[in-house]
Length: 117
Image (tube, rainbow, N blue to C red):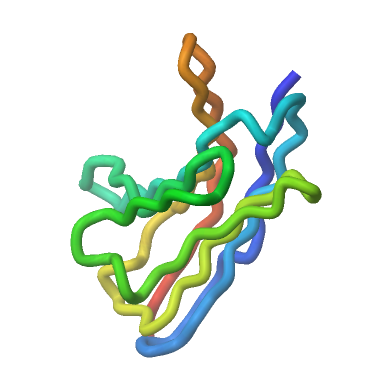
């Protein structure tokens, strides 16, 4: 069975920081690529960041590299998203995703991030 649980969302002021965590109850966690996506009202779901199963390679969505950092700890079955210099445009529900070639694609329930003064 697979379960992804996000935490760390909440309210932040512009210019502030938040750290999101995703705890994965999943066998062979170290074989999955892990990603963060976000979706704001009226917008398409957007890829924020992705990290390879080994943690060696990372990818960031447009305009996000430099402010956001993805990391993982395979010993803890956890992936993180450090968000700095937050902007109101970052307000969205953030989702954790686990993907592996061969039809394996799982999602968490999401955590709300609100950036406002």
